[in-house]
Picture 1: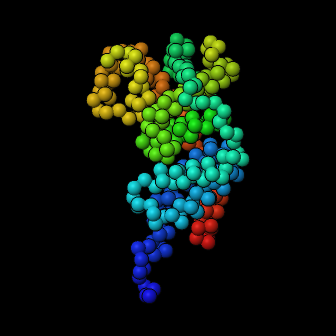
Picture 2: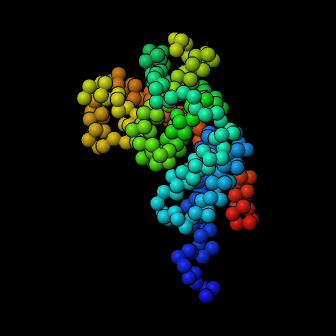
Picture 3: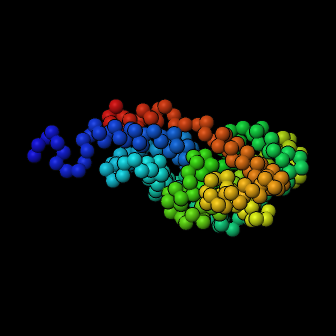
Length: 196
Length: 74
């Protein structure tokens, strides 16, 4: 068997590495942010991302180049999280997220602050803390959509749920988070508001 | 299109997930209906705010080095 050319379909190592760097490693920030919101702490997020990259590199030949590496990687990350981290990092969900009623902050603030200027006074850490307090099914949907900008279809593929479920969870997640942030803003005196 | 129908599609509109026809109908309603317009603006600002607050953080430099070392022995 010759060594100059690959006898099978797998590309030479250099090529594999180059395409992996070009298409997968560029998503490290996305994977880390999503990993951090899933695990809830930087050390576990580091491990989760590292493991995701290893799994992805091993399976790289199966990935159809130039399609959607970000969604492919996020699917691997989520599976790794469910299989190895969820049990020890977070407690299983005890609420049925699909029955949580939406709550519209806009109707509370439309007279006092219809432009939502109070949002601007809430700092990064407070927003992230509020996101971390969401039920997991809401948190993962919201992070994929509102932080990373994935489409409903992409999110449905990663979470393995119908697009309709993505829509309804996103709607409820956004409102629940908005309510938390509004209550925080009232507490801090950023807005007078009325008790929610 | 009435206000209730319009608001039902609020997030799909902001997420650019609607068909062009429905998007046009919503736009037309928003032009004629300042209260709906205000609500859409509020939610749009909220989503923009979320994104701005949550994307400042990236992977630590050390993690990238760790991944490269693990994958390519560097």
